[in-house]
Image 1 (tube, helix red, strand yellow):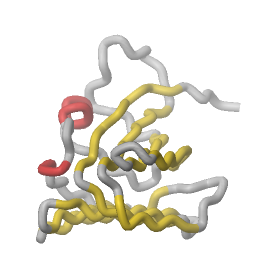
Image 2 (image 1 turned 45 degrees about the vertical axis):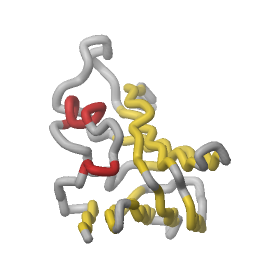
Image 3 (image 1 turned 180 degrees about the horizontal axis):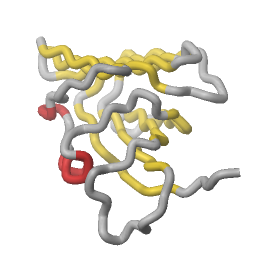
Length: 143
């Protein structure tokens, strides 16, 4: 059993064995970024595969931004899909779903994922694979 805990103040190397394309993040960040402090803006449940997709908005900028990105941006949108999802539990969705902890365990060739947010929102699931769907820059500006 491998246990990875990503939480505020704790940085651990993630086991990439269940991530289909970690290079989408590691080429920019050097590793899978710490999602603590990120906001979950969207969760989609799809019956195909079945799959749960989560969109994170973070101000944690990569060390190496893609050349096509503008010089000035203030957030990064990272979308992850959890493929072959089952045993899904979801509660307390709210307006500000700021991640305080992500638990990622690989046991018997499946990944167990738990995402806790500051507002008590929680997503728990078991999946076969994690896939990085997209990494995009964003500009929300300042008031």
